[in-house]
Image (cartoon, rainbow, N blue to C red; front, side, top):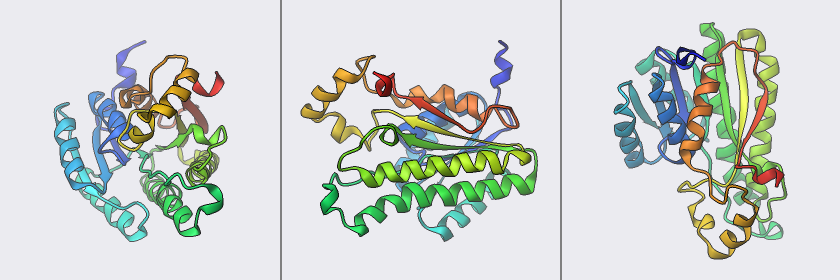
Amino acid sequence: MSASLFDLSGHTALITGGNSGIGLGMAHGLAQSGADVCIWGTNTERNEAAVKQLAEHGTRAAAIRCDVGDEEAVTAAFAETLERFGRVDSCFANAGVNGKGTPFLETSLEEFRGVTRVNLEGAFLTLRAAAAHMVERGGGGVLVGTSSVSTLHGAPRNQAYAASKAGMDAIIRGCAVELARHGINAHSIVAGWTETPLAAPILHDPGFENGVMKRMPQRRWGRPQDFARLAVYLACGVGGFHTGDTIVVDGAYSIF
């Protein structure tokens, strides 16, 4: 297979939550393949550090501070992205927050909405902005949402997170069908337990690690770079026949 099939020169990718973890892992893969990359994040220091790393690949990279749960902020950030790059060919709705691990019966509506505001509403606002641009511009595009294995099995004390990711999966499937006539593909990446700043506290809890690692066939946690090649493959699929997929990347955890 020719390497040129995965050449993303002239392609612009937008990644929310792209300043660390899975988002940054995908950003590195895309930049290495020639794509210009714009990341959105709320942490200015991480944004700046990520841009420095991505610039080493020789393509354009920029970071914009954006709270994806704020509709006006998303509108402004997308306009700035277009001002800097001129277009967006692929959009990875990756920004997310965890719940507090509160027992379900003690979870307040405020706490529940604090998670869905970013993970579900933020994904909706981001994907809607990207899709509107792709339809108006023509030429197709790719929408990708970062989901979780919590949608596949029971997630005790984490119902808000699981619900937000399951809702995002539904949005992605609907986009795959509705936007296909515009050459826009849409996919969900279902991530397993991965070494990220968001997951590190629980992954390194001795009780959790001793119990869960036994169900990890590869006997390791995922790494952000494990998502790099998949991001490149999906970004290269503009207008292709592969769309509407839910792709599990969990080291076979969910089937063991």
